[in-house]
Length: 78
Image 1 (cartoon, one colour):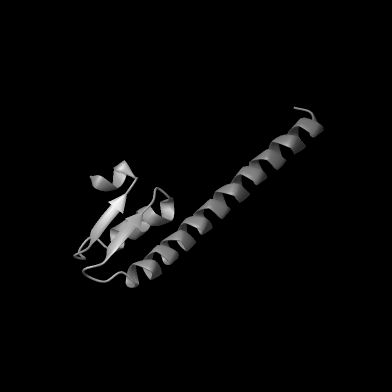
Image 2 (cartoon, rainbow, N blue to C red):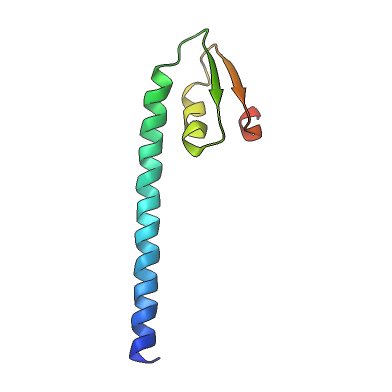
C-alpha cells in the first residue's frame, strides 16, 4: 500500500468514526427531547405522532398514558 493510499484509508476510517460518534450523540439528544415532549402529554389528550425517530422514542414514554394517538407511522401500531 502506498503512502497516499494509506492516508486516504486512514482519513476515510476517521471520517466514518466521526460520523458514527455524531450519530450516537444525536440519538441521545433525540431521546432527551422525546422524554421532555412526553411530559407535556396528559391523560385525555389527543396527539399526532409522525414517523420521525424522535417521535418513535417519545412513544416509549407515553405507553401508559390514557391518550388518543393519531399517526401515519405503521410501526407505532405494534
